[in-house]
Length: 114
Image (cartoon, rainbow, N blue to C red; front, side, top):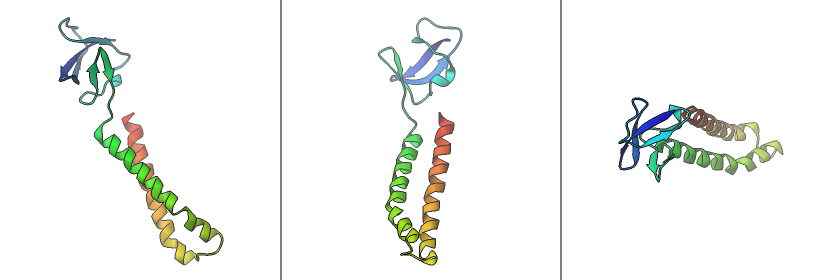
């Protein structure tokens, strides 16, 4: 579909599907979902995709949580080997589950953005 872009300092602020106006930048896209208004920019005749700030923060948090999860892996092995009792391991297990729950929640939110 042919669309016009409404720009402010190269940031795409809106899309017009019709009528197409010759004085505005015009591009061909498959779907309106191809452009994230307010985030993507139009540079050198092309749409440049930029992630939403929340998505960037969510990805960084997921990385941090996975590092925290990995940092407790050795405690799982100690428990499996019998070096930690069930009672000693219980708070670690709960903490690891909270990390996994948050990772799953953030990943679900990110998948909805795409």
